[in-house]
Image (cartoon, rainbow, N blue to C red; front, side, top):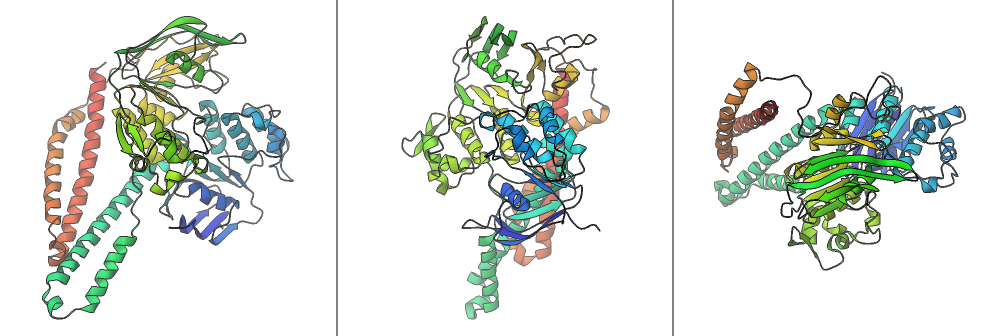
Amino acid sequence: MAPPLLQLKNIGLGFGGRPLLDGVELTVGAGERVCLVGRNGSGKSTLLKIAAGQIEADHGSRFVQPGATVRYLPQEPDFSGAATTLAYVEAGLGPGDDPHRARFLLEQLGLTGEEDPATLSGGETRRAALARALAPEPDILLLDEPTNHLDLPVIEWLEDTLKSSSAAMVMISHDRRFLAGLSRVTVWLDRGTLRRIERGFDAFETWRDEILAEEEREQHKLDRKIVAEEHWMRYGVTARRKRNMRRVGELEDLRRARREFRGAAGSVALTAAQADNSGALVIEADGLSKAYDGRPIVKDFSTRVRRGDRIGIVGPNGTGKTTLLSLLTGTLAPDEGSLKLGTNLEVATLEQTRESLDPNATVAATLTGGRGDSVTVGGKPRHVIGYMKDFLFAPEQARTPVGALSGGERGRLMLARALAKPSNLLILDEPTNDLDLDTLDVLEETLADYSGTVLLISHDRDFLDRIVNAVIVPEGDGRWTEYAGGYTDMLAQRGRDLSRSTAGKATKDEPPEPKAVRDQEPKAAKRRLGFNEKHALETLPKRMAELQKKIAALHEKLADPSLYSRDRAAFDEISADAASAETELATAEERWLELEILREEIEGR
């Protein structure tokens, strides 16, 4: 077996209180592609910095194969001392590296090399940092949120580049599709420890849920055993006559184990405060046009947005996505055309740059506006500490300056502030940046339950597919086209991606695509439910009801406090039956939901 390129052993690190990392082990072999997942604040970036040699752990060891080169992509690169982007990338090259790769990669990423680092946008900063990490063709790549602030063409270029690389990789990313396409190993940083599975990110969520479910079952058994032992302490004949010190000690050990158990972190409780319904027609745009210095950004664009629509705006950076969004919401006047906004609109906005956050203000003051200790959510006052907990902020963070928060924490703070405001129109500009996967799941559920209208700019393909029912993309020369469905549906209708070489440039053999509107039927072959699908739709509800009754009966048996001490074998058997029934019920519900959605789509065609 070949020795590892990188190995971390028994890594421990703490900043007071519980350790952030506790006995962490990580091994990376040649060519391995590892995705590192975990909650915001769990220590992923810290662990990557230890692997890169940027910081030292309190204890443990770091080994890098002699002669192996390591390159680290931080979330916030340091450009100090670099006069241009080319100088910054060249500073990362080693003595034997090809100096021409620095300029080549910058050009591939849409930069000239002459840019002043002080004037770079978020996307340009990320592209320059990627060029610096990739230019030496390292043996080990450590990538912290590599897709943040990148547009879709660059993300797809990066995926292709990494797939063709022979480097070993450890990646942190919120982009599910990016991780699923590249990873072959998944490591999960959870409550200070690291778990590993020799499979890619596609398998992670099922694996994680199985682990958490097993933990719940073990804790339930522990709770029942404590109840049984406490019953013996109070009522046992031996206990009344003479204390059995061994059993007393065992009970104390059980209680200590229960106290010290670090349960899974609570989930984010996002709820969008909803105002009264807007009018049925939210936005009507007719022939909108906008140009800067003679360059058309939007030309003759028309659309109708109805209440409940979820519209995604995508495209390469610099094509005018934010300009189009500003035109549609009336915050920017068009050069030509007309805009009609619906009645009773209440707008809440989440901007990408988060510049509206005062870095010197505390978390509590940001949510309350500096007035008192309560925040108005949906027109009702809530104590700021309770509202902070919904977004996974600890009470002691109330006085933490915003500038001291991580990127993910600032993202959650922006969400907390935006969602507290009653609205029926949500404007989201890159809402997924820096959010962990669990928070993204809850954000998606929140938007699914939101009865208002959503306009969003995003480069997250999976998020777009899950949320939007229409996508607007640039076709060049200020022309924008609207396609029905999500991002994948848009690609199927458009017939090509959004790469710089083709975006908006119809070839001689390829005429511009006709506009697709949300009310049109998708151009797909007529689909019918098969016999097995029809049968499952008819029989699954009955089976789910039977399983629910069975689970309720089993839980009622488990609620008997004396069952564990009276009949351990029966307790274990009933627990196993309940877990099996719950798994079967979840599978049945998921299958029924898939078939019901399919049936509605077919009948709606």
